Image (cartoon, rainbow, N blue to C red; front, side, top):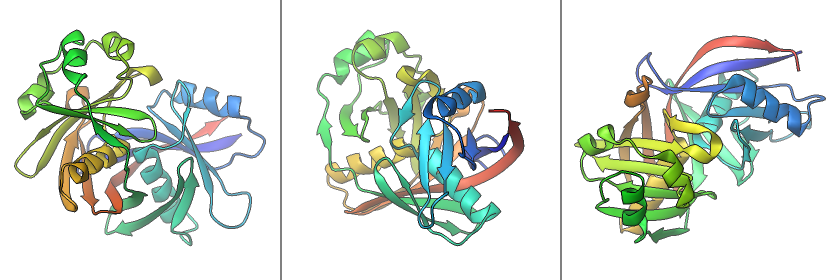
Length: 265
């Protein structure tokens, strides 16, 4: 038996957030066992912390469909567990893209990620949007996170909120990770769709926030900050705080613990 902390990451005050499973004991568990736990949990991701050796803990992240090298809200959730539950003596972890520092600011958990350099315009996004039943974006980019994310600027928050994309069409046109954005007075209204990983819509996506920072840098904003609001359409209002400079993208938010499950695997 092993424990799984069930958290809500990037909550908006006490509400919403993106559910996450954090497993802190990986002794005797296989990769297939991790995948099965992720499927059983049914969350967008479950993260496994391996700290059997001294030094920096290693984490592995699984969606219900596959293992992925990097994802934002699992890293924030794992940082919360390491910092708040114990032992509170480290400030970084290692995932599939390298070491990720983290820290607390009041009740917010922040992770610092290297700025993504692989950003390019996506002129084909208009055709993808039309095929998926979306309005044509004002602008669009690909960002490798390292999985390719299609970021589409829809112009208005209302357009993002009312979007009902055909997920099969997104997949068939190569947009397996699709991030819809629109600027607001103090930040962005966003939605994220990941049909390849059996995630119809993600309530809060830290890696997509990092992709947005990479896009802002790509178009000439070397540094900045924003508040990202996501998840309202799936009943999980979420808030992500984002900062970036030429070298890093940092995202943070609040975390709440719902329960601790005892797993039989």
